[in-house]
Image 1: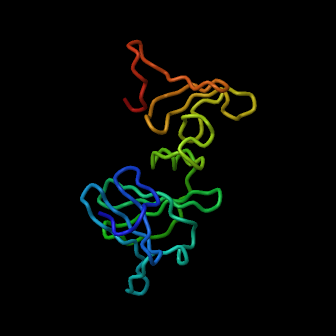
Image 2: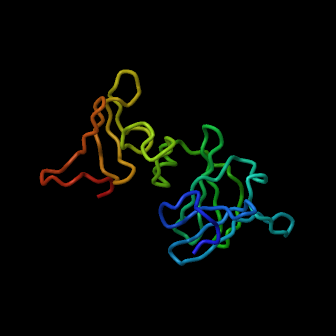
Image 3: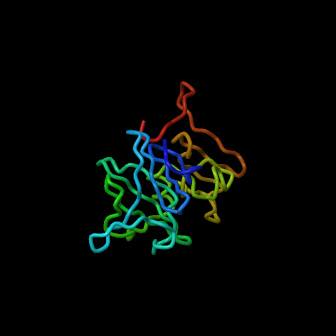
Length: 172
């Protein structure tokens, strides 16, 4: 179990949280491990807190497929990723800026502010936007919870289905 209170986020295989001292921790659900996030400066380990992060706030964490982790930081309207070793040490810096679509796809989240902040089920920018004003009012996109394709037509969210009635899923 994680050593922090309520997680900042608990989607996917990794929970992100802070302890009472404001130090960031990961809880890796794949191996039930608590992983403190740290910097190493001049051979000295320092816990990661909001006060020593230079590039925004950590909002998401996931495994990177290689035994380590990847963090998503929000810095105003920008999103950055940061690579973390399996030991929780942040390597390099948060230098790779990603689009909302890339961030939402990589972390399988909706960054509109809540589960469905803009009233549609699409992750990130629409794949196709046929609306004349670029707002996505007539568009096709991938759903955040299901990875299913939807057509957004005004206020209607229409699930795209195969002939047998099953949803058309991204990557399937």
